[in-house]
Length: 487
Image 1 (cartoon, helix red, strand yellow):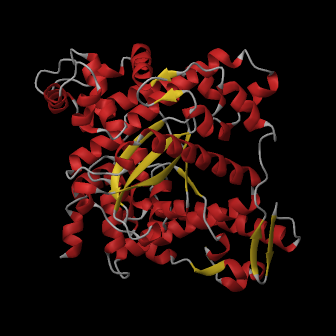
Image 2: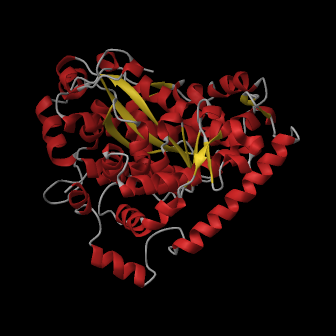
């Protein structure tokens, strides 16, 4: 009965069979199980041999493996010591601006407001000031009532009407894609990345007032209820996806949704998360769908490798090995794996829904176990690569730093009501998250434009520091922007 219920979410069996027969599966791997597994296991053997040799000769870069375990040297700073002072100096060159004026500027450049069309006739909003005020009410967590009270010429009735007819999930999504695409195409943004890598992270906001009953408690964050805004950000600092999730749900559930269902022109190839963003199921699906997954795993030495031949074949790596791969089980459920991944890729079902279901099934569920084993192959390959590559560690660290900078900006923007989620309806909570993400994307684009304009006014050393990937950071994102009132 459970399997039948799960099956209802997937591509019809006949359609899947036809796609496979026509070699048209929308996946990034060889669909032939024998060829695929032979290739991955050969690569795994080669990597295990390489890491064994390096560990035995004590040549792992900035890492030591002994019988007592693994120790990796923390990364040194990848930017000059004077970077922050120079960035502070540069930030003084940027003009001070009200957030309302910033949104007007960015809309003049991009026309993002045209995407907030009328629900019935598709017409653009006639009053741009009214529209941007409604968006800002979401972004700064002020709400329509307080926004009307603090804005001359606006009324709650006008703002409420505009929100009802012009602001929806799909209009927010289209407008966000417009901003992300402009950042993607901006020449100065290319200094921070080429738009092919990204990171994601959850940011918790306390639930208070009428919204307290909708919040969830996670001991990780204390005893107070809250909501999580889970956001994806590109290597160019553009936040291209966000959604509201329960704080009690593991971040990894939503990693693939943001990569698959955003509307921007970004073509992400490599994605970073922290420890909460990975499971073996996610490792498997990321590879099947064409993404390189690179989480920063806390206590890496406790995250075990899984090998093809048993621990006796790799005595040097014994402290890291957790068991032997069950390749037979992967072969037995190969078509089930391909059908699941194809269904997610084609949008028949969301990745998050399937990951929640797989995570809730008993351990003996065939597909869940097979997907886990496939993920163990990919996780083991990733860890072996991590042990060999300081550059990979730096890349992941820099990518996650960008997400932390964005979260600091979001916290500064979302300052009203003590930064608490006080909306009772999930729809209004989604609008809060979408408005916040749209405005942070606008701030990032505005900073990018003005940094390019003023970069010629600073020393070569300061200009170099500005383009170091981790260091657009909190200072440059927020220093010259007034969320409300006079600058």
